[in-house]
Image 1 (cartoon, helix red, strand yellow):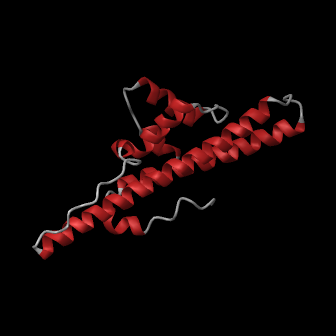
Image 2 (image 1 turned 90 degrees about the horizontal axis):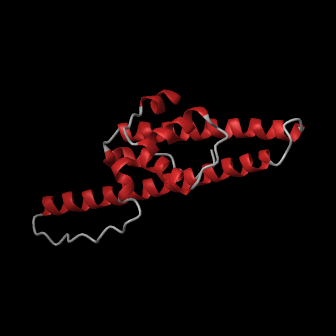
Image 3 (image 1 turned 45 degrees about the vertical axis):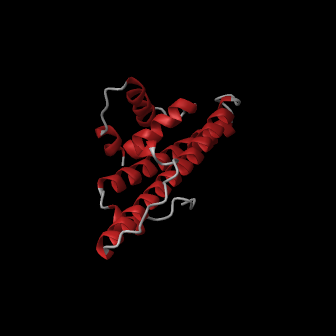
Length: 159
């Protein structure tokens, strides 16, 4: 799982910093810009379009085969944007939960047993975050959007 993140390289300092936090610091508190960088790492160029409305297509072309291709391409783009919206929402939820646990842990002394329990929960949730990131990268490696999109498990589940 972590191998994919290790292989992700960038010359952009903020991306390298976020990658380092993902790999080495489960106790990092995620701020706004850091969250966006994680999303752009996950979604790549698609992140820029994920929340922009897709204009309605003009499918009034007389040629039936061209119209079918245009409709199919339009539908694939809608599904892809919806997927990346779900990626963002699930990522935000995971990071919110991590932040909540980290802030709770900071409010307890390290000797406190609850602090120890919180640290274990943080490590488990951090692993879940890395698994989620891995799943999105694997999906991105399979860029055949059409049929593969239908096979993607819904990201809205808590599993």
